[in-house]
Image 1 (tube, helix red, strand yellow):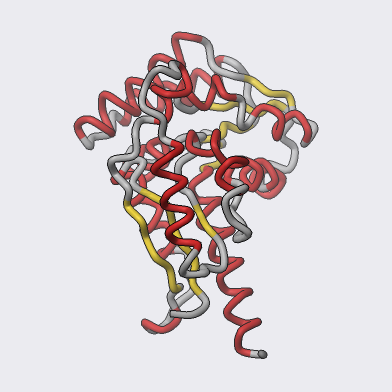
Image 2 (cartoon, rainbow, N blue to C red):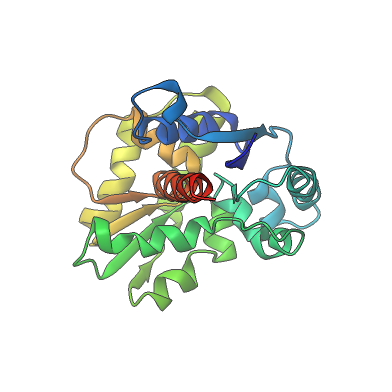
Length: 240
């Protein structure tokens, strides 16, 4: 297969399924051949990223992710997409293993804020405690000239419950809780836009029902960027 990219997924599987749905839904296609070429690695047994970030005595997700990158690099994809925000804690180490570019999900998301909310000044972040702790979004937000707001412990705990207790454990979305979290961030803490910095939050966004809160979904941004690059590479290949 030519003109393809590799998705390193399975963190978690339901979130990866949502990513694939978003990717295909947002691809402009009128026939089968218009869709994108990609390989999906659904590596469901990768150890929990947040557990390791908060406690380095826990199993390290880096080794299985590194093995995925090394194995897939032998197939020469055009690029990698990793639809797991917390896994980007290892991005620099993973990129050092290959010359094939790995899309930087946090960076692409913050770059896209200007399209979602041109007048935004205060950017809120909801995510796993691992992502809040490792700061993969912090400098991107600050360097882009925004004010960064991280949730209170209470809101962070509610977010973890939504991610782990509901979506990961039961594959259900508590829409009322999700909307409450967004309300806290927007109405309570006056964020101009809220970054959905966990792919399980993308699942919540898809399933919880309509709302009017200003959010930017990192997983959707990653899908859009993947489509853009894949189509660019396909067009380039046609002219070689």
